[in-house]
Image (cartoon, rainbow, N blue to C red):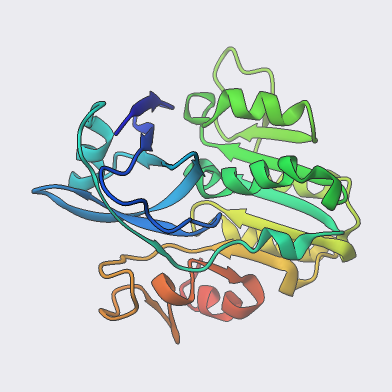
Length: 259
């Protein structure tokens, strides 16, 4: 691990450089299995890549992620990957794009925004909508300011503090105001699983085709190769058939789970 940046009280971004041969390139939306040696392994989406490094944003929620959160420069972290499907950002070329993130869901979407900005002329109108529980939970503050200089960026929090001067509420409240052509829009959505169906439905109600709404789903992934079955969602094994899927393909499965 070559660099550690604190994002929030419980979330850090780690820059990893290979100690041996380089890994195959990761695509936005794919994930790696990160190992805290002696403790365990967890799936973490890539939140950046380049110049031989991998970037992962890790929230401390269990023994493995707590160990990864606490690692320091020079520590060795195990990495397996890349695994899973990607956002296929290139398929949105020529149309409008809406990126909708909730909480830590901004991490898998960060590479999407970077691709959109790096290849800005290939896409139509682009909008980024980001929600968080509180202002203290917002990720990538510097990135959000940088993105806002190039494309519309709207940020909303559920529970404002005394110094918050921005929008308050749910990220779904931002969707009716997005300045895009819904019929020609691809939407990339990631956040808590209970948040994604309402966001998808709001986008569809706005006129975005259900087949053009992509979501990233998370389950307990143990093998990363579709062997163990821990990440099964209906007929899908999300480490292999996901994590990025079309909302139209999983809508009924998520409804069954009462999300």
